Image (cartoon, helix red, strand yellow):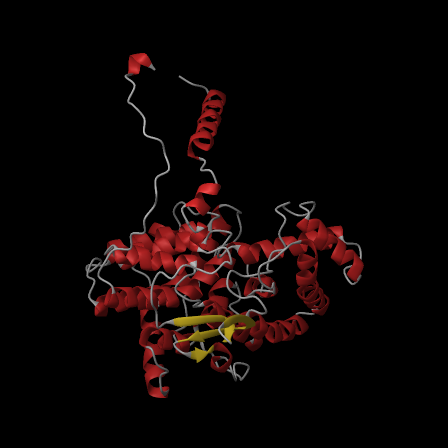
Length: 452
């Protein structure tokens, strides 16, 4: 029987074999014109499908040439800047309305929206004893794993789990959109109680409230929140709910849906993609980076000191030593991320309500300074600007949302987009997505065991 130490040594040895025998000469990617990450050398994604759900624009065509422009994001053809106009008006929540738009391809009138909100409220309930039997058992600090587990378990309660008719898939998607906030928040409370020994409270959602309001109501012990808090969270949901078919989790939804699997499995796969720090977990890194900055910079109002810290980040001398300034840059946008621009004014209002204007000023300083620091240190093929993750973590922090729920809130928003894309895939494509991989391994003769 091997000891724990011997097991560890053996695993380390096996890992070295993995690296030795699985590493591929990077020059072969160029030789065979294989695009790493399905992106060309300029970072442009390989065209893999068609969609009507949303559109991202980062450049204009001028005299046949691509010219970078301020980023534009469209939901079903509508500019996101137009969709969020009037968002600051009292009780003017948009998440439900724009979910309707993404799913059905058009904006609802008042009667249609009221009926849709009523349907979502009716579906905002979990099976009997589900919280006790599933969520409270084996709680995890990783809320995304907890959320995926709950989603997969819900399939056991669905008598039509594998029915791929659009009406049934739509029903399942609406359930996911309605139940994700409960699954995420209850999962956090279970972890907070059993693993941290804190008090636990399970508040039922109020059918008269919006998704954003219910999130805050269920999360807080006193169920109280301000109107501005709810509006800012609603805006965060709107800005995160969709971002083109090529982002990793949405592409995952297309790939898995093309196999003919059920909605629960497709959503669990999308969740597994989103939880990665290169995708949905980026805003946590921003908050952690800013906390490290405040510990290591004596005067956060001193631009020279802040610039020096940012340079250390790029030189792998600060924070996690990865050489990154988190929240800066995007795979598509160059000059600006429209979501970050929309978010910023609301972030400023919330920082005033919370008495954290100094922190907002620090974020604003870095937003202006970081692209220049990056450009001065590295050769970049396109512009660099703040992305939506740069401010979203700060917002969630001001809303007293624990870091464990940062990525689940992203999922609560993005499930609307995943649902629209899943339905679009089932309606339009009847072939399984199967890209090609070229083998670059050498052919070998088999060696019998006693001759090795």
